[in-house]
Length: 377
Ligand code: PHE
Image 1 (tube, rainbow, N blue to C red):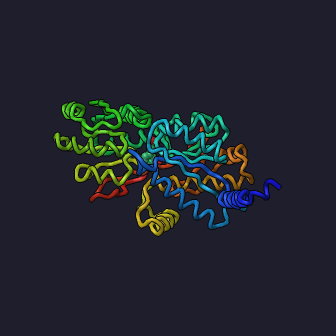
Image 2 (cartoon, protein in one colour; image 1 turned 90 degrees about the vertical axis):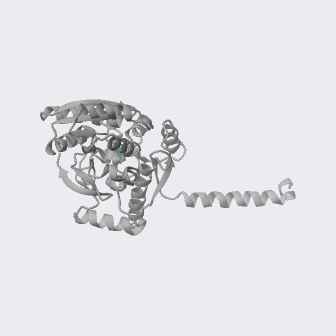
Image 3 (cartoon, helix red, strand yellow; image 1 turned 30 degrees about the vertical axis):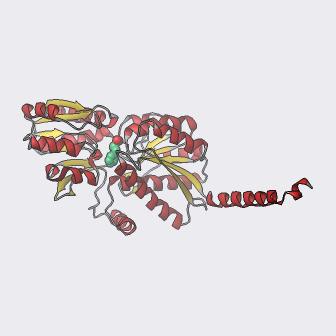
């Protein structure tokens, strides 16, 4: 009786009921989490990966989804900030109940997320983190890209192919990525008979590199290896050119951003970097992917787009093979991945949950990234 005297309560009860059924509707689908640097210092990394993930999502759901259900991506932005990723990944697992995770590009942020995913029993696939340690975290951590011991070797081989006997290295000591690449470059370059004439370092976010570059100049190298992100690489190369250092710089995948040329301009012309993918490939599968991407975004895909695309498609394939979305079974199915046809190459995961894939060398030519060659593992 009391209840009827207050009819607005009925209205509220009704609204709550409709709202919750609406929410249920919105929440249809298999929840998959993504954590990415959509904003902040390394925004092009996260934005690119997300575009690849969204393209894959569209295609997967358009062809009937997975196990009769659509996939539902829940994407969180860590703003490129250290410390944010761990909070977001905990939220994705405990609040959003994701059955798997896609992330990150930067090795440092994947290393932040990996122990949480591992402890929670949720499989995590990094699209683009190349540092060796990422998948060493445990048996729930996978990647769809090659690793830095290989990438550093590729760069060293290429430097020596250019005829260089003397190389200098400039390392970003704030990044696992840069430290790992510098180490493997040095090992391989000295193995093939080269010498390292100068080793300098900086910390991500630095703007003035004149002291390091003056030292490099007097060491007289024939190439400079610069395992930096695109946030510093073009600044360093510009300052090097101003100081009269004319030799080519060679970098790794961290250079892959339109901002390398946007900021570096003429200074970066002729420089080389290793990467996972070239959008100039004539492989029919890659051509179809590049066309689909152009249609959706009116731009050319970079490596992180391609790796994000491969990561979600590989996950969907594993769920289908598992026949369930149960994280433990999905984990086992990802572990068993063989010959998955990625646009970045065939993906077979080894016992360390890493694929063995070729790398490409790209050269900055007329402000674009021109394909030079493929280096097989
Ligand atoms: N490999 C880099 C890292 O591990 C990230 C990266 C991948 C950057 C691909 C650009 C392209 O930190």
